[in-house]
Image: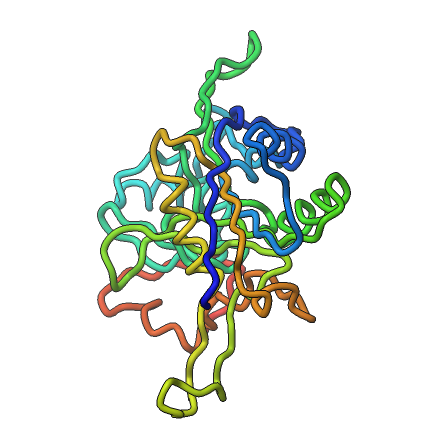
Length: 281
């Protein structure tokens, strides 16, 4: 990569609510900054605004925790209602210990709390007669499908082909701190196979699979921030064309490590829990 790559924050978006036309709002805000999408651009979006636009919100005041949620909540010291919501989004529970609740989500991501989160979710009061608002936000039902819809909407409104990346921040079992990861994408090679290419000295690469989706997610997450920065979208311009428009667009799924290669999934001494319908390994 020899050409410069531009990372342009898209600030000034309103608080997103269910049903909002997210793409139209982003295009309008870009225009406010004197910008518009160009072919080959990448639009990186925080998962939270995608989920909110899709109505992926649950009011904890409406949740009745079951026995399993109460049992796990006592171990991890969390609200049983929150644990019930997490379990509803879980394919398999991986780790339960004090303050730690790691699961495999229904979408296949291994992360803390199934990605269920309270941050940057408005707690405005509901209508009279409704339970008090205690909203939490879930991951998109299908982040790749969400990315495809946004990509198609940009083409519909702006007439250009772009790529879309939806990111979130996850912890990692072997490093401290959170980092951006790619949850969904469209029009982007998220796992770039460089096996067979040569390094500077002519050595043929044997095992190099570059996690482009995660690297780009980490870079854009750094711009978005995690607190009150109010920058949930970033325009990326100048990414090498060979990373765009894959002939077979698999979205972000190639970034998910297969179970048989996940050496961190079942650490010694951890408690293992499974939904009754889960299949054993």
